[in-house]
Amino acid sequence: MLIALTLLQQLAAQRLSAPPLLSPDGAYALVGGDSQPQLWLEDKRTRERKMVFQVTLQTLTLAWSPDSAAFIANDRMVSDIQVAWIYSVPKLTRLDLRARIVAADPEAIRFTPGENRTVHSYVHAIRWLDAKHVEVQLHGHLDDEIRVGNAIKPGH
View 1 (cartoon, rainbow, N blue to C red):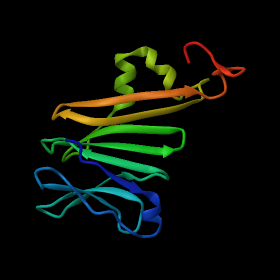
View 2 (view 1 turned 90 degrees about the vertical axis):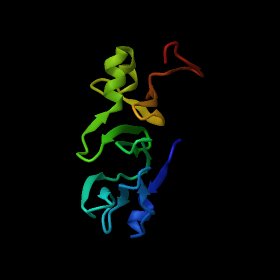
View 3 (view 1 turned 90 degrees about the horizontal axis):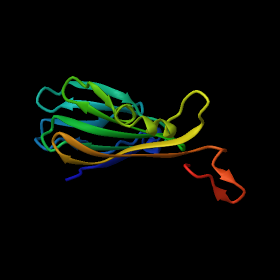
View 4 (view 1 turned 180 degrees about the vertical axis):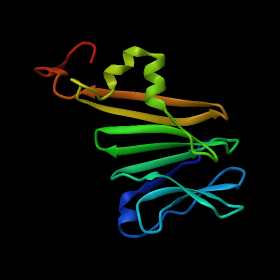
């Protein structure tokens, strides 16, 4: 089951905080920063906090794995870029889902920003299928090169 929480930067800018997102086993919580737009991992037993990353201008969605060993972070950084990571707990090692998709399917590189490529690129971890598998979507489009008149160029 997907447990998701959307944190809006507007809340952080107003010094308001979203409620903590508890892991399924209750051992950890994902919490916002007190005075900065940040995401923190809190060990509920020791109350120790580790900063995960600075929250960006758009939205952030989070979901815990069923076994509480990891969580997804979908970060819509700006209107044309969204990234997705899986963080393992408690060390906070990060797996870049876009890089994993491109490694498995080199054709997917056309949906990623890069030299000589201006794209709108969106990676979104949709849901946990089980404790070890995540359903992920990568989509996007090239900026100005996709139209011929009113039609979309083939392949774009």
